[in-house]
Image (spheres, rainbow, N blue to C red):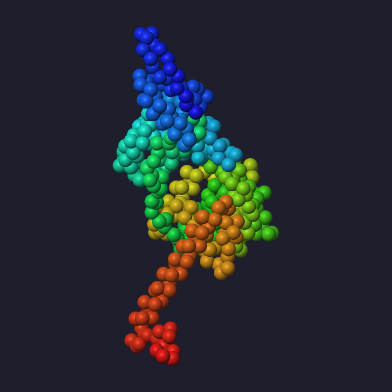
Length: 380
């Protein structure tokens, strides 16, 4: 709590000094009149109740300096940031945040400056880039509040971190199979495992011969492979415990695995998908082949390999009686949110089919009085 001390200056005048503790430091402010000191003490004590008091001197560090330390120390669910996540954060900081706010002391990053910065990034880079950057800035400043560097997080834009990504193109099963055929033989299995097995690209590129059991038609997801600029190929554990799983593949997908192994074997280090030189497949070559396959088949140019996983997930969600928990387990989701999205999409498609049938039947059925639910009831 704050308290007031009466002190005499060198000139012989009385001053009223309000003293309070902010974090580990003691702060003070002097007033000529007692009533002003009383009012300020009441303000400090009120702010203490809601946790707004912070030592101004701790906010002198610049946002750039603090963000660098934040990246080093950041832990999510007991784990440090993955290389790909850290790389993504570094790009957002370098591209959208630090050029505008990096040299400001933390205490100078005000709500007004955040709003101005957010508007500038939205105009220059688009809403989704602004939303991603806003979420990162808010997370960094939330930690600064916890560290008592600043009193409150200045990121207060309602909905500022919400993205409005357009609906992704959803390939049909026929398009998935056509894309498989259009890929070079060596890389066809990648699309098979994504489009029919529902595996993520990093999971596919991380598969080893030891992860494949052709007798039981299963693949075991034990690691993922990513490529980070400046770091090269990074192999790590799945992002969550749910990502470590065993996936039973449909018959055609497992036949494709067996055929691939018969022709190409695996890399010397054990990876299932290889480049012509015999090493693990590189994303750059896969990307070139993928673009050529899309052009050959004539699908949406914006389609990504990950959209094939969406196709597999949506097919799974259409299975009668499948539960959200079962869908989560197969796809490697740690929360039901994504699985529910696939099930919602299936329900929405069912409504569209029913509406189409209604329109079709209305067009060919002779007009006649509609029968209400209570037609023929006594007293109607």
